[in-house]
Length: 220
Image (cartoon, rainbow, N blue to C red; front, side, top):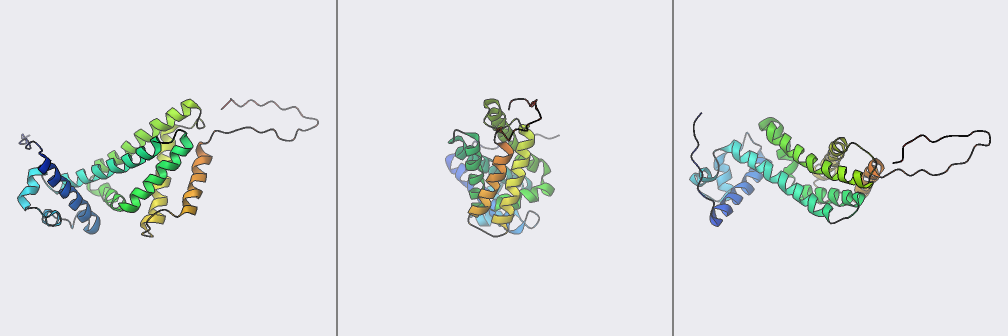
């Protein structure tokens, strides 16, 4: 085991250069894929010298992991900012999904790079999904505690709804190269989300003249 030399303190100029390298790497990984990407292509895209790359990153794998983490952080931030402005949980779901679809339309690299990560850096891919689910499940658990949603398992619901959103976005945004989710598709998905989460309400049905029924279901 060898010690790694510490990186120099990040200056404002260095932070800007690092951001340019990340942006360039995102574009290169999206367009040519990890295995065809090279540090030379990334530095050319960023407009910096080859040696500058190694001031900020040790190699291609490190910057790939950083790109995955950066995309993951930005999409979570977009969804969180949108949903936190809405007081009720179903409204928050609508806002969060809307923000997710807009982000993926603007950053299709999210799909293409995360899918590469399954083979290039499985730990980065797993961290991406786990970080989304952690926050999502916590929000669902809090909403369940307030009675805003039915008593679902928040972790299972978070994985299921995240998967639905990702595949809907892949089909109607990525494959169609669309600028946003079609409104009818969005509303159809929101019907599914509401059906899965909205608290159930019991309504009185027609009474049977010769039968007495006892409702033994717990209050929801």
